[in-house]
Length: 560
Image 1 (tube, rainbow, N blue to C red):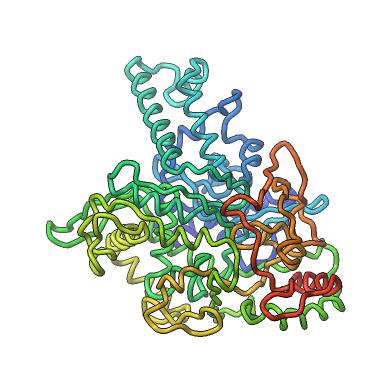
Image 2: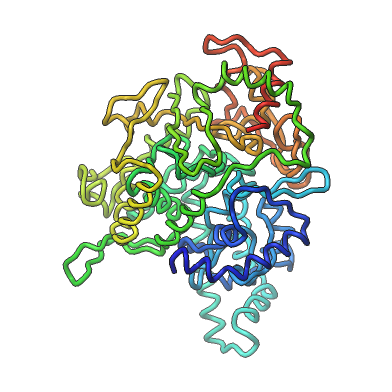
């Protein structure tokens, strides 16, 4: 179903969504989306096949008889609960969608934010989500195991799935299928094990995608530890960027945006086949998959319309005099990397600024893992890196090279959508090239070096419109609030708590407090370093900010 048909289908859902918002006292900020577009973003199927849909509806929590998907449990995992609607008939939380007889997460699970201030709940579309996906998956796996082991749980589950008159053969088959689902999730947990707890609001998405590619090789014990989680970035203006991802590894030119989104679905349990299909017995049709390429384009259209959120009127008023002082400091300390832009300009285009690891000095692990993870090529050995072009994959290869083959192979299966994606990119002003000019360490690097190790061992800076909503800061979420980010690294908190949705408008961050569901972020653990980006701390030849200047810059950033 294409984007426009989908909008017609969900038109009636929009009224229901408005009613839900009123009942929950949710304030939606003006971000240039209609209710129809918001509903489309929340619940459109991308092709994720995490678990059979009916199983998820009826699984109980491992430790009690409450449904695993009950609102209290899902909120404890960072999900945003919603009421049922035509496009979400069973009232799943934002970002969980049906794919045929299965369900799985969509991009809205990681890019929809909800914060609270005093007695108000504020929804920020495209913002940094709070979900703890590994903890969600661990809980789901435990629920599957408990349902297998606990006779009463299984009886209740069986009755909900099969009814009261199931034959012994049906019951036996159900248990076998449930066992298979448990083993699938348990195996995934082993293949993606890491000793580093991610906590709320971040995920090692690159690690997950690369491991799925290595698993697809068919070689056992062929994954790497996904130990470099990064924050879910806010996604307004993403289609207008020349390069995206924290390490600037993917361009938006040509088919870049569709390829990027195919990779995202691979990372969140999209089903893929790894043998070439042939149309009419001879035409190379690439790799089949569960991925919904037309919907990925539709979602990209919606995100391209999204505006960043302005500082809410219900928050404390911005001190305009202090913000004016902050603007001068922004021009001195920040604007070289975080350029100005018009957040509502329909023709806006963004050339991101990349800073290499030696310049930015933030935790290097994510950037390093992305290019240094390796594995056996297995069934992909001898196939071209880019499916029909590039060097042949050797016996052992960088994981990203194997992932490239899979993503382009899947794209090959959608020739019409690939053509339309190139047209979409052109309409957004992107050149018809694989890699447009790239800005690294203050200059445009030599053509052909855009995805070299030098260019990819780097992190991206982007315009800061809406940055007030995006704590914790740095790519790995290691700095609790904006005030802390402007301190010298040695003075930043080495521990803070995440778990509360309560927003602190003074420091531009979440309230840090220990609660039953809170997660303590320890910046001394590998991958969690809060070092670097000391542009307010006297590094890089700039004078250190005074305490008054620090607060002035925080105040100005609230205006963006």
